[in-house]
Length: 357
Image (cartoon, rainbow, N blue to C red; front, side, top):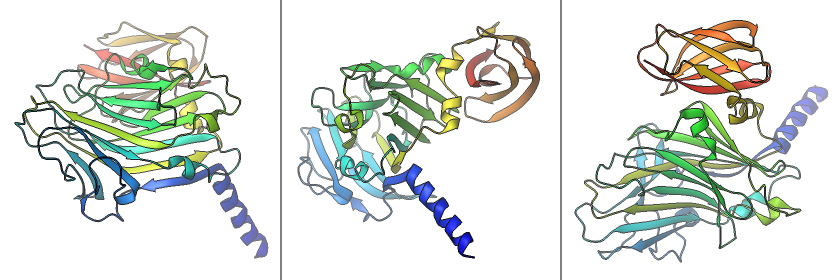
């Protein structure tokens, strides 16, 4: 019995050592109503959030960021613009400071910082320009380049982009288009989850999008000469920037839920196995395809199977192969549209975009 108890305690200790949840905000303990008590970004509101109305010539108040209830979710953070028409642009910022003190509580060696959150995309805004974006960032203390990684969402067309810190400036788009094609888009009025891994040990950043069933990778802080990257570039804040030009045709409403930060010992294997580096070594032709598509690769990797998903993430079919480096994939039964092929090999899983005529 004692050995059994010791084994359980050992497993719990290992789990705590290698995966530590250091920040968890699902808003369920908040009171319904205004998130903030001060719209100048000085006095923290509920949960330590700072709310700031940056630009608006109308009546300023705290009612543009509120805690509301969502069916099936409980309480969520809802951000809204004034009801159009309004005569001057409206913009506001939200910040949750103090993340560095949470991360300081991690155990030694847990130098991969995982950030995840759920985001409600809101309605399409047909009158906006593509430059009008929502910006969601993980910041650190450098005032010149404060964002470690920044996710941009465009309510005009649902497209997304990512920039990340290379140690001196920002790099753009995290090679998402190598997986999903140019300008990958998200559905409107939909909850979407995002997971980010900041790997300070290996100077890599991974952006996982379960909606696309894909992972993008970039060279995080690769140009920095720091001997202690996590201390010098430690996350300090979760930041959201929201703007609504005067020409919006309906209120802009977006939501957040389940913001979590976890300190890990290493990037999980399922993230490492699906990446753009492997995907770039594969070629599909013809693409667009009618009935058959040939899949080749530049390094003689053996294909074990190919799983076909549609762009909503629904698995459609699986075709198994006998460890061949060049295969013929039958797509005759697919309807016309865009698909993601998960190509499982002896070295990991590659993801390629296929267009079916």
